[in-house]
Amino acid sequence: MKKEIIVNHTNEEIRIALQENNISTELFFERKKEKSTIGNIYKGQVIKVLPGMEAAFVNIGLEKAAFLHINDINKNAFAEAEEDNNAEVAEKKLSITDLLKEKQEIIVQVAKDPISTKGARIVGNINIPGRNLVLNPASNHVGISKQITSYSERIRLRNTINKLRAPNMGFIIRTVAQNRDTNELQLDINYLMQVWEEVNVAIKKTKAPALLYEEQNLTKRTIRDHLVKDIDSFIIDNEEEYNNLQDYLDQFLPLYADRLSLYKKNIPIFDAYNVTRDIAQALEKKVFLPSGGSLIIDQTEALTAIDVNTGSFIGNSNHQDTIVTTNLEAVEELVRQIRLRDIGGIIIIDFIDMENETDKTKVYQKLKEEVQKDKARSHFLPISDMGLVEMTRQRNKDNLTRFLYIDCPYCHGTARVKSEFTIIYSINREVLSIAKQEGKKTSVLIRLNPDIASFFNEEEYNVLRKMETVLGGKVQLHADSSFHWEQYEIFIL
Image 1 (cartoon, rainbow, N blue to C red):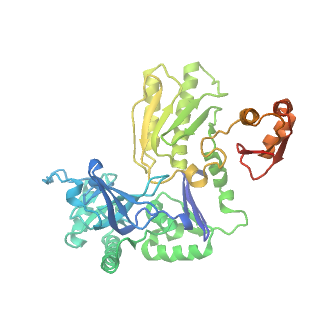
Image 2 (image 1 turned 90 degrees about the vertical axis):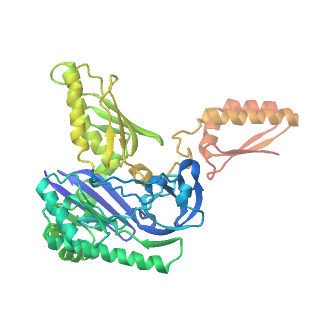
Image 3 (image 1 turned 135 degrees about the vertical axis):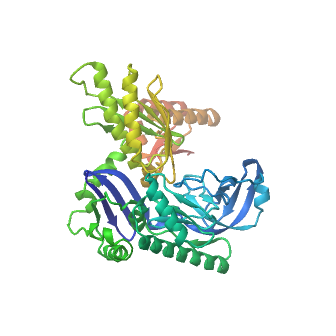
């Protein structure tokens, strides 16, 4: 399978697509004015402690106060590591008020960007990621990625890091560290310790709220987190950034330097690699499957529903085989769409009903296989009797739709506006009310949206004439292009 990383890099925006066999599987965006704060380290000030929620709001200098839960305060929780099962931690049960007070200054790191109306989610346990290792200064523990399955390699890596690390400095050994030699691991430790030293200097010099450490840009983070052995090429269309990355790879990742290439053609890089097509598809509600079936994807604030349909696919054998074939095909595409759109939270998948338990197991196993390709953590239940799968997926940032779109200024995100009839009959009721209050021989001026004015004159002219009869005067329509579809004003002349 061919795997590529495609990068469109401008001063204002970085767009990155991960592709498998020329089909986009994941998209990443970063805008200069909307840069992610995940991984940034801040000196913050506690502004409110909430005993009932065992949490606190912290001012870290962003527009909205950040949220800190008691479980995220100085806990040695490694997202990628395996805990030492023999360790026993006996600690007093503390409440949030025992740990934090208002106006207290604390060092925190952003775990989740602000989403919609919510502020950033922050943690007190600092993790600074490198290429092969993650530094955890508050720990004295060496954790190892569960994806490194070789027992001898785990022992080798743990022993190596224990020899190289400074006292009381914890590390997580990442999956990509497998088979790395001592020199490469030492380089990573040197880099991470240098970053932590710079953070400590900033802590002493600054007053809260203040940014102490800012994560690398999206392009370098992608190299750090996604440029692995099975990536065939890393293609970028910006010459200046290409030169910067070439130097970076030569210094830190010489084994991958030959994967980097500069795109020079006149056709935009995202068009040439069909990423533009994949983005357009990822913004559609309906996604067609190769056999003729389809997925209907409905995203709401609370959850996402994915409905599988056979569509025009009738199959070559019996009806149940057709259903299973469609469901299996749907699994691959719906997981790709979840990754591509970066859908998080609660996801409900409605497969076509299958009568045979063997068929359900086959589809469920296929779902497990496809989800393993996704780096975001997720959990899902077996297929229910109604053909439903309940799934949750880690949400760290706004999904693709929220990133690229804003709420419609007409419908304000409801996806609905009042019909022409609803608006006109509302105007009619107000005019009839005016007629009762003002008596006979009253004229009015109605300012309204041009489309509604046209509909009034063409489709509901009789309503206009009846209003004039009731008023005993004239009704003047004044079309105003600045008026919202539903907006109107009535003036008595």
